[in-house]
Length: 597
Image (cartoon, rainbow, N blue to C red; front, side, top):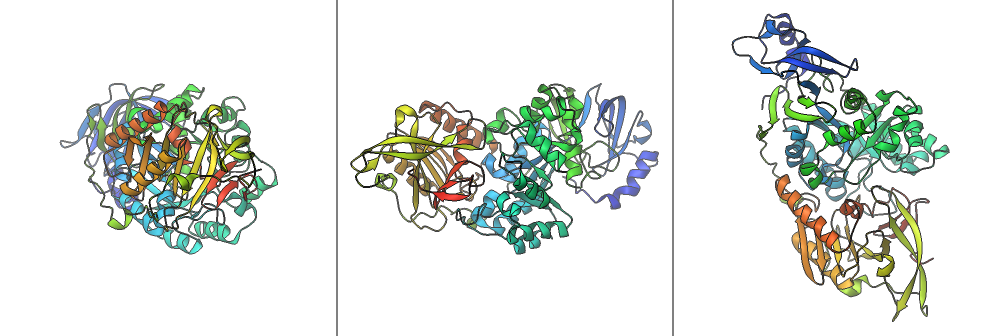
Protein backbone atom coordinates (compact mmCIF):
# COMPACT_ATOMS: atom_id res chain seq x y z
CA UNK A 1 0.00 0.00 0.00
CA UNK A 2 1.51 3.31 -1.11
CA UNK A 3 1.45 6.15 1.35
CA UNK A 4 -0.98 8.88 0.30
CA UNK A 5 0.73 12.25 0.56
CA UNK A 6 -1.12 15.53 1.07
CA UNK A 7 -2.25 17.33 -2.08
CA UNK A 8 0.18 20.19 -1.46
CA UNK A 9 3.08 17.76 -1.81
CA UNK A 10 1.79 16.04 -4.94
CA UNK A 11 0.23 19.01 -6.76
CA UNK A 12 3.31 19.78 -8.93
CA UNK A 13 3.41 16.19 -10.11
CA UNK A 14 -0.33 16.14 -10.84
CA UNK A 15 0.07 19.30 -12.91
CA UNK A 16 2.95 17.75 -14.86
CA UNK A 17 0.97 14.58 -15.53
CA UNK A 18 -2.08 16.52 -16.74
CA UNK A 19 0.18 18.59 -19.03
CA UNK A 20 1.89 15.51 -20.40
CA UNK A 21 5.32 16.31 -19.01
CA UNK A 22 5.36 13.36 -16.59
CA UNK A 23 3.79 9.94 -17.19
CA UNK A 24 0.88 8.79 -15.01
CA UNK A 25 0.98 5.74 -12.79
CA UNK A 26 -2.38 4.52 -14.11
CA UNK A 27 -4.63 5.45 -17.02
CA UNK A 28 -8.18 4.18 -17.44
CA UNK A 29 -9.33 4.50 -21.06
CA UNK A 30 -12.72 4.50 -22.80
CA UNK A 31 -14.86 4.92 -19.69
CA UNK A 32 -18.26 6.48 -19.18
CA UNK A 33 -17.53 9.08 -16.52
CA UNK A 34 -20.20 9.40 -13.83
CA UNK A 35 -19.66 13.05 -12.98
CA UNK A 36 -21.32 13.84 -9.67
CA UNK A 37 -20.40 17.53 -9.95
CA UNK A 38 -22.33 18.13 -13.15
CA UNK A 39 -24.84 15.33 -12.66
CA UNK A 40 -24.15 13.78 -16.04
CA UNK A 41 -22.54 10.75 -17.62
CA UNK A 42 -19.71 11.80 -19.93
CA UNK A 43 -18.93 9.21 -22.62
CA UNK A 44 -15.52 8.22 -24.00
CA UNK A 45 -13.47 9.54 -21.08
CA UNK A 46 -9.90 8.79 -20.02
CA UNK A 47 -8.76 9.11 -16.41
CA UNK A 48 -5.11 9.50 -15.39
CA UNK A 49 -3.88 8.80 -11.86
CA UNK A 50 -0.62 9.73 -10.17
CA UNK A 51 0.56 9.49 -6.56
CA UNK A 52 -2.81 8.05 -5.56
CA UNK A 53 -4.78 11.03 -6.92
CA UNK A 54 -6.61 11.91 -10.10
CA UNK A 55 -4.48 14.08 -12.37
CA UNK A 56 -6.44 14.23 -15.62
CA UNK A 57 -10.09 13.59 -16.50
CA UNK A 58 -10.86 14.19 -20.16
CA UNK A 59 -11.36 12.83 -23.66
CA UNK A 60 -7.84 11.53 -24.33
CA UNK A 61 -5.10 10.76 -21.79
CA UNK A 62 -2.68 9.44 -24.39
CA UNK A 63 -0.26 12.22 -23.52
CA UNK A 64 -0.17 10.94 -19.91
CA UNK A 65 0.99 7.43 -20.83
CA UNK A 66 4.65 6.42 -20.46
CA UNK A 67 6.56 3.18 -20.60
CA UNK A 68 5.77 2.33 -16.97
CA UNK A 69 2.14 3.49 -16.98
CA UNK A 70 -0.46 0.83 -16.22
CA UNK A 71 -3.31 1.07 -18.73
CA UNK A 72 -6.78 -0.30 -17.99
CA UNK A 73 -9.35 -0.51 -20.77
CA UNK A 74 -12.77 0.28 -19.31
CA UNK A 75 -14.33 -0.79 -22.64
CA UNK A 76 -17.33 1.46 -22.16
CA UNK A 77 -17.95 0.61 -18.55
CA UNK A 78 -18.92 3.32 -16.09
CA UNK A 79 -16.28 4.86 -13.86
CA UNK A 80 -17.97 5.77 -10.58
CA UNK A 81 -16.64 7.52 -7.46
CA UNK A 82 -15.92 5.20 -4.54
CA UNK A 83 -18.93 5.04 -2.26
CA UNK A 84 -19.02 6.76 1.13
CA UNK A 85 -20.94 5.64 4.21
CA UNK A 86 -21.73 8.85 6.05
CA UNK A 87 -22.78 7.33 9.37
CA UNK A 88 -22.09 3.89 10.75
CA UNK A 89 -20.87 1.88 13.71
CA UNK A 90 -18.26 -0.73 12.83
CA UNK A 91 -18.98 -2.64 16.01
CA UNK A 92 -22.50 -3.44 14.78
CA UNK A 93 -20.92 -5.62 12.13
CA UNK A 94 -19.38 -7.69 14.96
CA UNK A 95 -16.04 -7.06 13.23
CA UNK A 96 -12.87 -5.09 13.77
CA UNK A 97 -12.30 -2.08 11.51
CA UNK A 98 -9.88 -4.13 9.41
CA UNK A 99 -12.27 -7.03 8.92
CA UNK A 100 -15.14 -4.63 8.23
CA UNK A 101 -13.06 -3.00 5.50
CA UNK A 102 -12.25 -6.40 4.00
CA UNK A 103 -15.97 -7.14 3.84
CA UNK A 104 -17.12 -3.86 2.26
CA UNK A 105 -14.35 -3.06 -0.23
CA UNK A 106 -15.71 -5.54 -2.82
CA UNK A 107 -19.04 -3.73 -2.51
CA UNK A 108 -17.50 -0.44 -3.56
CA UNK A 109 -17.20 1.31 -0.20
CA UNK A 110 -13.94 3.28 -0.13
CA UNK A 111 -14.80 5.82 2.58
CA UNK A 112 -16.47 5.37 5.96
CA UNK A 113 -17.32 7.83 8.71
CA UNK A 114 -17.47 5.73 11.84
CA UNK A 115 -18.78 6.59 15.28
CA UNK A 116 -17.21 4.12 17.74
CA UNK A 117 -19.53 4.97 20.60
CA UNK A 118 -20.10 1.27 21.20
CA UNK A 119 -16.53 0.57 22.27
CA UNK A 120 -16.45 3.97 23.99
CA UNK A 121 -19.26 2.87 26.29
CA UNK A 122 -17.18 -0.14 27.32
CA UNK A 123 -13.57 1.08 27.27
CA UNK A 124 -13.88 4.86 27.20
CA UNK A 125 -11.40 7.11 25.41
CA UNK A 126 -8.84 4.31 25.20
CA UNK A 127 -11.26 2.25 23.12
CA UNK A 128 -11.87 5.14 20.73
CA UNK A 129 -8.13 5.57 20.30
CA UNK A 130 -7.70 1.89 19.44
CA UNK A 131 -10.21 2.07 16.61
CA UNK A 132 -8.84 5.46 15.51
CA UNK A 133 -5.35 4.01 15.17
CA UNK A 134 -6.55 0.85 13.44
CA UNK A 135 -8.49 2.91 10.89
CA UNK A 136 -5.42 4.92 9.89
CA UNK A 137 -3.55 1.86 8.65
CA UNK A 138 -6.07 0.79 6.00
CA UNK A 139 -6.02 1.22 2.18
CA UNK A 140 -9.41 2.93 2.27
CA UNK A 141 -10.52 6.08 4.08
CA UNK A 142 -11.95 5.50 7.54
CA UNK A 143 -12.59 8.73 9.43
CA UNK A 144 -13.59 8.67 13.08
CA UNK A 145 -16.21 10.76 14.84
CA UNK A 146 -15.57 11.32 18.52
CA UNK A 147 -18.47 9.79 20.51
CA UNK A 148 -20.61 12.48 22.08
CA UNK A 149 -22.88 10.60 24.46
CA UNK A 150 -21.10 8.20 26.79
CA UNK A 151 -23.38 7.29 28.43
CA UNK A 152 -26.09 8.13 25.91
CA UNK A 153 -28.51 9.39 28.56
CA UNK A 154 -26.88 10.34 31.87
CA UNK A 155 -29.07 9.45 34.82
CA UNK A 156 -30.99 6.82 32.89
CA UNK A 157 -28.16 4.29 32.52
CA UNK A 158 -24.62 3.56 33.65
CA UNK A 159 -22.12 2.64 30.96
CA UNK A 160 -18.60 1.30 31.34
CA UNK A 161 -17.15 4.80 30.96
CA UNK A 162 -18.02 8.49 30.91
CA UNK A 163 -16.81 11.05 28.39
CA UNK A 164 -17.33 14.80 28.40
CA UNK A 165 -16.23 18.07 26.85
CA UNK A 166 -12.63 17.69 28.03
CA UNK A 167 -12.26 14.34 26.29
CA UNK A 168 -13.95 15.68 23.14
CA UNK A 169 -11.55 18.62 23.03
CA UNK A 170 -8.59 16.26 23.46
CA UNK A 171 -9.75 13.96 20.65
CA UNK A 172 -10.30 16.84 18.23
CA UNK A 173 -6.51 17.13 18.01
CA UNK A 174 -6.09 13.52 16.86
CA UNK A 175 -5.21 13.28 13.16
CA UNK A 176 -8.11 11.07 12.08
CA UNK A 177 -10.98 12.64 14.03
CA UNK A 178 -13.45 14.23 11.59
CA UNK A 179 -16.07 15.54 14.00
CA UNK A 180 -18.46 14.77 16.84
CA UNK A 181 -20.49 11.56 16.73
CA UNK A 182 -24.27 11.59 16.79
CA UNK A 183 -25.55 13.77 19.62
CA UNK A 184 -28.16 11.39 20.98
CA UNK A 185 -29.05 13.33 24.09
CA UNK A 186 -31.47 15.51 22.16
CA UNK A 187 -33.41 16.63 25.25
CA UNK A 188 -30.07 17.79 26.69
CA UNK A 189 -29.29 19.88 23.62
CA UNK A 190 -32.83 21.29 23.54
CA UNK A 191 -32.42 22.27 27.20
CA UNK A 192 -28.96 23.80 26.54
CA UNK A 193 -27.35 21.25 28.86
CA UNK A 194 -23.87 22.44 29.82
CA UNK A 195 -22.14 19.15 29.03
CA UNK A 196 -23.69 18.76 25.59
CA UNK A 197 -23.18 22.39 24.63
CA UNK A 198 -19.57 22.13 25.79
CA UNK A 199 -18.91 19.13 23.55
CA UNK A 200 -20.53 20.83 20.56
CA UNK A 201 -18.57 24.02 21.20
CA UNK A 202 -15.29 22.09 21.37
CA UNK A 203 -16.08 20.48 18.02
CA UNK A 204 -17.00 23.74 16.34
CA UNK A 205 -13.88 25.39 17.74
CA UNK A 206 -11.93 22.71 15.87
CA UNK A 207 -13.94 23.52 12.70
CA UNK A 208 -15.33 20.00 12.50
CA UNK A 209 -18.77 18.53 11.86
CA UNK A 210 -21.35 17.84 14.58
CA UNK A 211 -23.42 14.70 13.97
CA UNK A 212 -27.08 14.66 14.91
CA UNK A 213 -29.59 12.20 16.33
CA UNK A 214 -33.09 13.57 16.92
CA UNK A 215 -35.13 10.45 17.61
CA UNK A 216 -38.51 12.00 18.23
CA UNK A 217 -41.54 12.52 15.97
CA UNK A 218 -42.14 15.89 17.66
CA UNK A 219 -41.20 18.62 15.19
CA UNK A 220 -42.26 21.45 17.48
CA UNK A 221 -40.15 23.72 19.68
CA UNK A 222 -37.87 20.92 20.96
CA UNK A 223 -36.86 20.05 17.40
CA UNK A 224 -36.16 23.68 16.58
CA UNK A 225 -34.15 24.03 19.80
CA UNK A 226 -32.12 20.97 18.83
CA UNK A 227 -31.41 22.39 15.38
CA UNK A 228 -30.31 25.66 16.99
CA UNK A 229 -27.90 23.70 19.19
CA UNK A 230 -25.55 22.88 16.32
CA UNK A 231 -26.04 19.34 14.91
CA UNK A 232 -25.43 19.49 11.17
CA UNK A 233 -27.19 16.27 10.12
CA UNK A 234 -29.63 13.65 11.31
CA UNK A 235 -30.25 10.01 10.43
CA UNK A 236 -33.17 9.25 12.76
CA UNK A 237 -35.98 10.36 10.46
CA UNK A 238 -38.50 7.76 9.31
CA UNK A 239 -41.14 9.93 7.60
CA UNK A 240 -41.05 12.22 4.59
CA UNK A 241 -41.86 15.18 6.83
CA UNK A 242 -38.81 14.32 8.96
CA UNK A 243 -36.49 14.69 5.98
CA UNK A 244 -38.19 17.91 4.87
CA UNK A 245 -38.00 19.43 8.35
CA UNK A 246 -34.30 18.72 8.70
CA UNK A 247 -33.36 20.10 5.29
CA UNK A 248 -35.39 23.24 5.86
CA UNK A 249 -33.38 23.86 9.04
CA UNK A 250 -30.08 23.65 7.15
CA UNK A 251 -29.31 20.11 8.29
CA UNK A 252 -28.43 17.24 5.99
CA UNK A 253 -31.03 14.50 5.96
CA UNK A 254 -29.18 11.19 6.25
CA UNK A 255 -31.33 8.35 4.98
CA UNK A 256 -30.34 4.94 6.28
CA UNK A 257 -30.71 1.42 5.00
CA UNK A 258 -29.05 -0.97 7.40
CA UNK A 259 -29.67 -4.57 8.30
CA UNK A 260 -32.86 -3.69 10.15
CA UNK A 261 -33.57 -0.01 9.43
CA UNK A 262 -35.47 0.71 6.21
CA UNK A 263 -35.86 4.47 6.26
CA UNK A 264 -34.95 5.47 2.69
CA UNK A 265 -38.15 4.73 0.76
CA UNK A 266 -40.46 6.98 2.75
CA UNK A 267 -38.07 9.90 3.16
CA UNK A 268 -36.72 9.96 -0.40
CA UNK A 269 -40.19 11.04 -1.50
CA UNK A 270 -39.12 14.50 -0.37
CA UNK A 271 -36.93 14.48 -3.48
CA UNK A 272 -38.89 12.34 -5.93
CA UNK A 273 -42.32 13.81 -5.15
CA UNK A 274 -41.73 17.14 -3.40
CA UNK A 275 -38.79 18.18 -5.56
CA UNK A 276 -36.43 19.14 -2.74
CA UNK A 277 -32.78 19.69 -3.65
CA UNK A 278 -31.12 16.24 -3.60
CA UNK A 279 -27.75 17.75 -2.71
CA UNK A 280 -29.00 18.05 0.88
CA UNK A 281 -29.67 14.32 1.19
CA UNK A 282 -27.07 11.71 2.12
CA UNK A 283 -27.23 7.91 2.16
CA UNK A 284 -25.83 5.81 4.99
CA UNK A 285 -26.21 2.42 6.66
CA UNK A 286 -25.95 3.20 10.41
CA UNK A 287 -25.88 -0.49 11.39
CA UNK A 288 -25.06 -3.54 9.26
CA UNK A 289 -24.25 -6.94 10.68
CA UNK A 290 -21.70 -9.25 9.10
CA UNK A 291 -24.27 -11.41 7.32
CA UNK A 292 -25.65 -8.41 5.43
CA UNK A 293 -22.15 -7.31 4.47
CA UNK A 294 -21.04 -10.68 3.16
CA UNK A 295 -24.24 -11.72 1.40
CA UNK A 296 -26.18 -8.56 0.49
CA UNK A 297 -23.75 -5.70 0.29
CA UNK A 298 -23.02 -2.38 1.92
CA UNK A 299 -23.33 1.06 0.33
CA UNK A 300 -23.91 -0.55 -3.08
CA UNK A 301 -27.03 -2.10 -1.57
CA UNK A 302 -28.20 1.31 -0.33
CA UNK A 303 -27.59 2.99 -3.70
CA UNK A 304 -29.44 0.24 -5.57
CA UNK A 305 -32.34 0.60 -3.16
CA UNK A 306 -32.44 4.37 -3.67
CA UNK A 307 -32.45 3.91 -7.44
CA UNK A 308 -35.32 1.48 -6.99
CA UNK A 309 -37.30 4.26 -5.28
CA UNK A 310 -37.18 6.38 -8.43
CA UNK A 311 -33.91 8.32 -8.14
CA UNK A 312 -31.72 8.82 -11.20
CA UNK A 313 -28.61 6.64 -10.78
CA UNK A 314 -26.31 9.66 -10.88
CA UNK A 315 -28.37 11.37 -8.15
CA UNK A 316 -28.29 8.28 -5.94
CA UNK A 317 -24.52 8.05 -6.40
CA UNK A 318 -24.19 11.75 -5.52
CA UNK A 319 -25.94 11.01 -2.23
CA UNK A 320 -23.33 8.34 -1.48
CA UNK A 321 -20.25 10.25 -2.60
CA UNK A 322 -19.99 13.99 -3.23
CA UNK A 323 -22.81 15.01 -0.86
CA UNK A 324 -21.09 13.12 1.94
CA UNK A 325 -17.64 14.54 1.19
CA UNK A 326 -18.96 18.09 1.08
CA UNK A 327 -20.79 17.64 4.36
CA UNK A 328 -17.58 16.70 6.16
CA UNK A 329 -15.49 19.37 4.42
CA UNK A 330 -13.61 16.83 2.31
CA UNK A 331 -14.87 17.60 -1.20
CA UNK A 332 -11.37 18.55 -2.36
CA UNK A 333 -10.08 15.20 -1.10
CA UNK A 334 -12.69 12.63 -2.09
CA UNK A 335 -16.25 11.97 -3.18
CA UNK A 336 -15.80 12.54 -6.91
CA UNK A 337 -13.66 11.74 -9.92
CA UNK A 338 -11.92 15.04 -10.50
CA UNK A 339 -8.33 16.33 -10.49
CA UNK A 340 -6.61 16.38 -7.10
CA UNK A 341 -9.04 14.02 -5.39
CA UNK A 342 -8.01 10.64 -4.02
CA UNK A 343 -8.25 8.09 -6.81
CA UNK A 344 -11.01 6.01 -5.23
CA UNK A 345 -13.23 4.67 -7.99
CA UNK A 346 -15.26 1.74 -9.28
CA UNK A 347 -15.60 0.18 -12.69
CA UNK A 348 -19.27 -0.66 -13.14
CA UNK A 349 -20.80 -2.62 -16.00
CA UNK A 350 -24.47 -1.92 -15.14
CA UNK A 351 -25.19 1.43 -13.51
CA UNK A 352 -28.84 0.92 -12.53
CA UNK A 353 -27.96 -2.37 -10.82
CA UNK A 354 -24.57 -1.03 -9.72
CA UNK A 355 -22.78 -4.16 -10.85
CA UNK A 356 -19.23 -3.55 -9.63
CA UNK A 357 -16.44 -5.19 -11.62
CA UNK A 358 -13.46 -3.60 -9.89
CA UNK A 359 -12.68 -1.34 -6.93
CA UNK A 360 -9.69 0.99 -6.81
CA UNK A 361 -8.46 2.89 -3.76
CA UNK A 362 -5.85 5.64 -4.07
CA UNK A 363 -5.12 4.41 -7.58
CA UNK A 364 -4.48 0.78 -6.63
CA UNK A 365 -6.67 -2.20 -7.46
CA UNK A 366 -8.30 -3.37 -4.22
CA UNK A 367 -10.86 -5.84 -5.51
CA UNK A 368 -12.09 -7.44 -8.73
CA UNK A 369 -14.11 -10.45 -9.81
CA UNK A 370 -11.55 -12.75 -8.19
CA UNK A 371 -11.86 -11.05 -4.78
CA UNK A 372 -9.62 -8.85 -2.68
CA UNK A 373 -6.27 -7.85 -4.13
CA UNK A 374 -4.84 -6.03 -1.14
CA UNK A 375 -3.29 -7.29 2.07
CA UNK A 376 -4.61 -6.00 5.39
CA UNK A 377 -2.85 -7.47 8.41
CA UNK A 378 -4.97 -7.80 11.55
CA UNK A 379 -4.80 -5.09 14.17
CA UNK A 380 -3.44 -6.21 17.52
CA UNK A 381 -6.02 -5.45 20.21
CA UNK A 382 -4.48 -5.55 23.70
CA UNK A 383 -5.67 -7.76 26.54
CA UNK A 384 -7.26 -4.71 28.21
CA UNK A 385 -9.80 -4.70 25.38
CA UNK A 386 -10.73 -8.34 25.77
CA UNK A 387 -11.84 -9.28 29.30
CA UNK A 388 -14.84 -7.00 29.69
CA UNK A 389 -17.75 -9.22 30.80
CA UNK A 390 -17.58 -8.54 34.52
CA UNK A 391 -20.40 -10.40 36.23
CA UNK A 392 -20.38 -10.94 39.98
CA UNK A 393 -21.43 -14.59 39.74
CA UNK A 394 -23.27 -17.09 37.62
CA UNK A 395 -27.00 -16.40 37.48
CA UNK A 396 -29.89 -18.72 38.27
CA UNK A 397 -33.50 -18.86 37.09
CA UNK A 398 -34.51 -17.06 40.28
CA UNK A 399 -32.61 -13.95 39.15
CA UNK A 400 -35.17 -13.58 36.36
CA UNK A 401 -38.29 -13.94 38.52
CA UNK A 402 -40.54 -10.87 38.63
CA UNK A 403 -42.44 -10.58 41.89
CA UNK A 404 -45.99 -9.26 41.74
CA UNK A 405 -47.36 -6.71 44.19
CA UNK A 406 -48.43 -8.62 47.30
CA UNK A 407 -51.77 -10.36 47.02
CA UNK A 408 -52.30 -9.67 43.30
CA UNK A 409 -53.57 -12.49 41.04
CA UNK A 410 -53.23 -10.42 37.85
CA UNK A 411 -51.15 -7.36 37.03
CA UNK A 412 -51.11 -4.81 34.26
CA UNK A 413 -47.52 -4.47 33.07
CA UNK A 414 -45.67 -2.15 30.71
CA UNK A 415 -44.44 -4.06 27.67
CA UNK A 416 -41.73 -3.08 25.20
CA UNK A 417 -43.23 -3.50 21.73
CA UNK A 418 -40.74 -4.26 18.95
CA UNK A 419 -41.45 -2.62 15.56
CA UNK A 420 -40.09 -4.59 12.64
CA UNK A 421 -37.42 -2.81 10.55
CA UNK A 422 -37.46 0.30 12.74
CA UNK A 423 -35.42 1.47 15.70
CA UNK A 424 -38.33 2.90 17.77
CA UNK A 425 -40.40 0.66 20.03
CA UNK A 426 -43.98 0.97 21.28
CA UNK A 427 -44.96 1.46 24.90
CA UNK A 428 -47.66 -1.18 25.39
CA UNK A 429 -49.64 -2.51 28.33
CA UNK A 430 -50.81 -6.09 28.93
CA UNK A 431 -52.59 -7.92 31.76
CA UNK A 432 -50.50 -10.88 32.97
CA UNK A 433 -51.25 -13.73 35.34
CA UNK A 434 -49.53 -14.25 38.69
CA UNK A 435 -48.60 -17.68 40.05
CA UNK A 436 -47.10 -18.16 43.51
CA UNK A 437 -46.39 -14.45 43.64
CA UNK A 438 -44.40 -14.45 40.36
CA UNK A 439 -45.66 -12.64 37.26
CA UNK A 440 -45.93 -15.02 34.32
CA UNK A 441 -45.17 -14.51 30.66
CA UNK A 442 -47.96 -14.91 28.09
CA UNK A 443 -46.41 -16.97 25.32
CA UNK A 444 -49.74 -17.37 23.50
CA UNK A 445 -49.88 -13.59 23.12
CA UNK A 446 -46.14 -13.29 22.37
CA UNK A 447 -45.20 -11.69 25.69
CA UNK A 448 -41.86 -12.98 26.94
CA UNK A 449 -39.31 -11.67 29.40
CA UNK A 450 -36.43 -9.33 28.87
CA UNK A 451 -33.60 -8.73 31.32
CA UNK A 452 -30.62 -6.43 31.40
CA UNK A 453 -27.62 -7.91 33.22
CA UNK A 454 -24.99 -5.42 34.43
CA UNK A 455 -21.58 -6.42 33.06
CA UNK A 456 -19.17 -3.51 33.52
CA UNK A 457 -18.61 -3.25 37.27
CA UNK A 458 -19.82 -6.65 38.54
CA UNK A 459 -22.63 -5.13 40.59
CA UNK A 460 -24.76 -8.24 40.24
CA UNK A 461 -27.66 -6.13 39.03
CA UNK A 462 -30.43 -7.69 36.92
CA UNK A 463 -33.30 -5.55 35.60
CA UNK A 464 -36.35 -7.54 34.51
CA UNK A 465 -39.23 -6.60 32.23
CA UNK A 466 -41.43 -7.80 29.38
CA UNK A 467 -41.21 -7.56 25.60
CA UNK A 468 -43.43 -8.51 22.66
CA UNK A 469 -42.84 -8.83 18.94
CA UNK A 470 -40.23 -11.56 18.62
CA UNK A 471 -42.73 -14.36 18.18
CA UNK A 472 -40.82 -17.00 20.18
CA UNK A 473 -43.11 -20.00 20.69
CA UNK A 474 -40.66 -22.51 22.17
CA UNK A 475 -38.70 -22.60 25.42
CA UNK A 476 -35.64 -20.51 24.62
CA UNK A 477 -33.43 -17.57 25.45
CA UNK A 478 -31.23 -15.22 23.43
CA UNK A 479 -28.46 -13.31 25.20
CA UNK A 480 -26.06 -10.68 23.84
CA UNK A 481 -23.40 -8.37 25.22
CA UNK A 482 -24.19 -6.03 22.34
CA UNK A 483 -26.80 -3.78 23.92
CA UNK A 484 -26.73 -0.27 22.51
CA UNK A 485 -25.48 1.96 23.86
CA UNK A 486 -24.37 1.10 27.38
CA UNK A 487 -23.60 -2.48 26.27
CA UNK A 488 -24.55 -4.42 29.32
CA UNK A 489 -26.07 -7.83 28.54
CA UNK A 490 -29.60 -8.22 27.18
CA UNK A 491 -31.38 -11.54 27.67
CA UNK A 492 -34.75 -12.22 26.03
CA UNK A 493 -36.46 -15.51 26.72
CA UNK A 494 -39.56 -17.60 27.25
CA UNK A 495 -37.89 -19.74 29.90
CA UNK A 496 -36.02 -18.43 32.94
CA UNK A 497 -33.67 -21.44 33.17
CA UNK A 498 -32.56 -20.86 29.58
CA UNK A 499 -32.14 -17.15 30.31
CA UNK A 500 -29.73 -17.96 33.13
CA UNK A 501 -27.86 -20.52 31.02
CA UNK A 502 -27.45 -18.07 28.13
CA UNK A 503 -26.18 -15.29 30.39
CA UNK A 504 -23.67 -17.58 32.09
CA UNK A 505 -22.42 -18.84 28.72
CA UNK A 506 -21.54 -15.30 27.66
CA UNK A 507 -19.79 -14.71 30.95
CA UNK A 508 -17.66 -17.76 30.19
CA UNK A 509 -17.08 -16.79 26.53
CA UNK A 510 -16.08 -13.21 27.32
CA UNK A 511 -18.91 -11.73 25.29
CA UNK A 512 -20.99 -12.42 22.22
CA UNK A 513 -24.44 -13.65 21.24
CA UNK A 514 -25.93 -17.02 22.08
CA UNK A 515 -29.22 -18.88 21.63
CA UNK A 516 -30.35 -21.56 24.10
CA UNK A 517 -33.21 -24.07 23.91
CA UNK A 518 -34.06 -26.34 26.84
CA UNK A 519 -30.58 -25.99 28.28
CA UNK A 520 -28.82 -26.65 24.98
CA UNK A 521 -26.71 -24.07 23.15
CA UNK A 522 -27.96 -23.76 19.56
CA UNK A 523 -25.65 -20.98 18.41
CA UNK A 524 -22.78 -18.84 19.64
CA UNK A 525 -21.02 -15.87 18.08
CA UNK A 526 -17.94 -15.10 20.18
CA UNK A 527 -17.18 -11.37 20.49
CA UNK A 528 -14.10 -11.18 22.71
CA UNK A 529 -13.11 -7.57 21.92
CA UNK A 530 -15.07 -5.38 24.36
CA UNK A 531 -17.88 -7.95 24.14
CA UNK A 532 -18.71 -6.31 20.81
CA UNK A 533 -16.36 -7.52 18.08
CA UNK A 534 -14.72 -10.64 16.77
CA UNK A 535 -11.20 -10.71 15.39
CA UNK A 536 -12.08 -13.57 13.05
CA UNK A 537 -12.56 -12.99 9.29
CA UNK A 538 -15.90 -11.56 8.21
CA UNK A 539 -16.88 -14.75 6.41
CA UNK A 540 -16.49 -16.85 9.57
CA UNK A 541 -18.37 -14.33 11.71
CA UNK A 542 -21.11 -14.17 9.09
CA UNK A 543 -21.42 -17.95 9.13
CA UNK A 544 -21.76 -18.00 12.92
CA UNK A 545 -24.20 -15.08 12.77
CA UNK A 546 -26.26 -16.92 10.17
CA UNK A 547 -26.53 -19.91 12.50
CA UNK A 548 -27.61 -17.52 15.25
CA UNK A 549 -30.35 -16.07 13.03
CA UNK A 550 -31.45 -19.59 12.04
CA UNK A 551 -31.65 -20.61 15.69
CA UNK A 552 -33.81 -17.59 16.51
CA UNK A 553 -36.11 -18.53 13.64
CA UNK A 554 -36.27 -22.13 14.85
CA UNK A 555 -37.55 -20.78 18.15
CA UNK A 556 -40.43 -19.09 16.30
CA UNK A 557 -39.02 -15.64 15.57
CA UNK A 558 -40.24 -14.20 12.27
CA UNK A 559 -38.74 -10.70 12.50
CA UNK A 560 -36.41 -9.49 9.80
CA UNK A 561 -32.96 -9.22 11.38
CA UNK A 562 -34.30 -9.87 14.86
CA UNK A 563 -30.82 -9.69 16.35
CA UNK A 564 -30.57 -6.01 15.43
CA UNK A 565 -33.91 -5.36 17.14
CA UNK A 566 -32.66 -7.30 20.17
CA UNK A 567 -29.51 -5.20 20.38
CA UNK A 568 -31.40 -1.89 20.58
CA UNK A 569 -33.78 -2.71 23.41
CA UNK A 570 -31.61 -0.84 25.92
CA UNK A 571 -31.13 2.26 23.76
CA UNK A 572 -32.64 4.85 26.07
CA UNK A 573 -32.46 7.69 23.55
CA UNK A 574 -34.99 6.29 21.07
CA UNK A 575 -38.70 6.20 22.00
CA UNK A 576 -40.84 4.79 23.29
CA UNK A 577 -39.98 2.20 25.95
CA UNK A 578 -36.57 0.71 26.85
CA UNK A 579 -34.78 -1.21 29.58
CA UNK A 580 -31.62 -0.09 31.38
CA UNK A 581 -29.65 -0.98 34.48
CA UNK A 582 -31.80 1.43 36.50
CA UNK A 583 -35.13 -0.03 35.34
CA UNK A 584 -37.77 0.54 32.66
CA UNK A 585 -37.39 3.89 30.88
CA UNK A 586 -40.09 5.84 29.05
CA UNK A 587 -38.10 7.71 26.42
CA UNK A 588 -41.05 9.94 25.58
CA UNK A 589 -40.57 11.65 28.93
CA UNK A 590 -37.00 10.50 29.70
CA UNK A 591 -38.11 9.11 33.03
CA UNK A 592 -37.81 5.81 34.83
CA UNK A 593 -41.26 4.23 35.18
CA UNK A 594 -42.65 1.34 37.20
CA UNK A 595 -42.95 -2.00 35.46
CA UNK A 596 -46.53 -2.28 36.68
CA UNK A 597 -49.18 0.26 35.72
